[in-house]
Image (cartoon, rainbow, N blue to C red; front, side, top):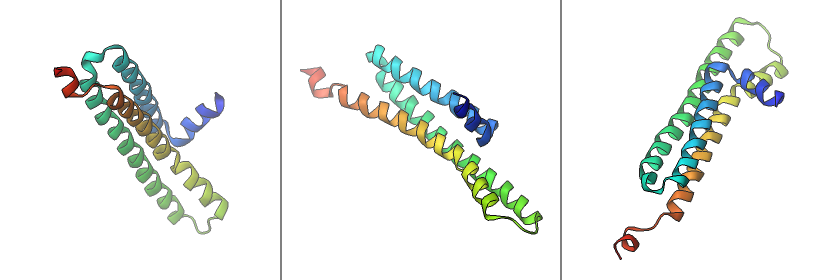
Length: 124
């Protein structure tokens, strides 16, 4: 558990903690979608919007982190390859977590689409 919290802090709390909140929200929406079948369409639309936001939020964090890293590198005379690799690894934590949240939500959407009855079956 402490490794997970370390990664959240390494990626930057400003971007990682909102993504964690979004992941919890996505999981709640998926459970709600299974329990309340009548509001599945609204749940699917919410999941689409929220997961897309998580993906974009992750890449925004990556871009802002890389700009800051390049500013720091520019101000230094000599940067070791290990320092550079460590910085790149850290900058990839936010988009990786954002992509994970996106995939969890999309998996929920796929399951809802698979199990929901088609319009023809409802009218028959």
